[in-house]
Length: 177
Image 1: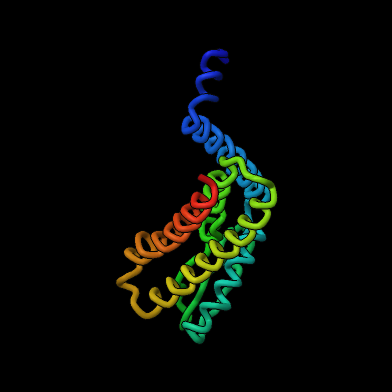
Image 2: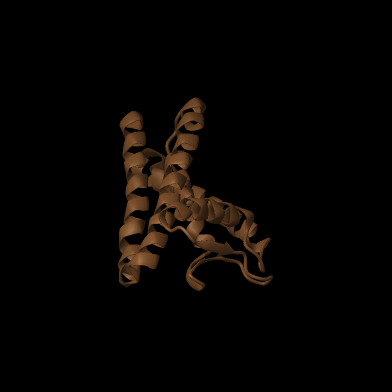
C-alpha cells in the first residue's frame, strides 16, 4: 500500500476506527461462517442451546408449547402449539450475528485489556438475555396474536435487540471517549 495513504490513515482517527471495525467484523463473520459450515445438515450447538433456553422461557408464557428437533438434514428447531407449528428457530435467531457487530465496534477502540474482560462478558449476557426475551415474547404473540407476526418479527423485536446494543455502545463510549 501507498505509505502516504497509510500515514494519512493513521492521522485520521475516524477513518482508522472504520478500517479496524471492518477488519474485525470481516474476521469474526468469516470465523462464524466456517463454524456454521461444520453443521450443514443439523442445528448448530449454539442455535440449539439458545433455542432450548428460549423454549424454556416461552413455556412460561405459552403453557403447552412443544419443541422438536426435526429429523436429520434440518438445521432448525420448531416450536409447536396445539399440534401446529408456531415458529422455527434458525441460526439467525441465536443472536450471534449482532454480537459480532457489537464485538467489532468494541474492539475497534484501544482500551486496557481489563476493560474488555469486564465489559464484553457482561454485554454478551445482556444481549443474549434480550435475545431470549425477544424469542419468548415473539412466541407468545405468534400463538395469541398471529396478525402481529410481521410487525413483531421484522420491526419491534429487532428494534428491542438493536436498541439494547446501541445503549451498550453509548455506555462503552462514555468511558472511552
